[in-house]
Length: 149
Image (cartoon, rainbow, N blue to C red):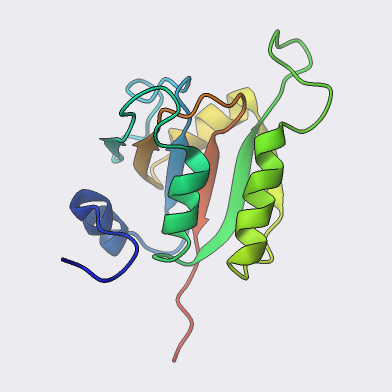
């Protein structure tokens, strides 16, 4: 048994091969994970049941495993029927997780259709599909660099 927080063998394998600027999508339960995916990306489904697991839970663990230099959210188009008049509540949870992990990273919203385009890039290496039911919960992480010891 591994002692690190990340113990999923396939996720560990994929992240170990990822490099600077690789993209990792943590998808909520509404995201079309099987069709909106990069040409070289792998899909890991952790959507056990509605609400299990959440994007926030996955984010918390991934931050212990990889350096992250950017975190993008899916922005809400003005004409979207599910648009909220404010940031989705889950975004504040992400900000708290980033802060607790010592990551001074701001969430950067990308418009919905540009978000899909970013996920479909050649830099996308992994989608982790969750059962998260929160609206606008998708996160696109950009892998950073490991600093010299």
